[in-house]
Length: 106
Image (cartoon, rainbow, N blue to C red; front, side, top):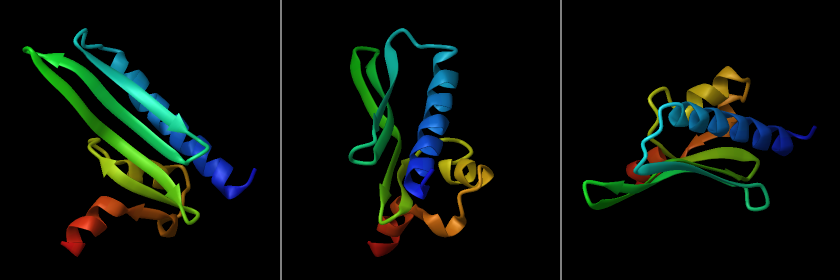
């Protein structure tokens, strides 16, 4: 299996597990959803729904593969997606914390 296919599988497995854990105690008013787009190498875990008559929508995790690296665009998980990636053997040099780079650029 080539590197990018391997990375796609790792990302999907991590996000599917997060989604499964989140849905083990579901909130009837807020849905946890996954969007796994292999063609464009975009991977999202997000929530939509209603809470006290207010619309809830937010991205918990946004990952993409760009220039043969895994770019973490958004990560609101407790342990961190980068930690998960390192734990399954992705080299640190192939992980880009894009949200931090954006903050530094400002």
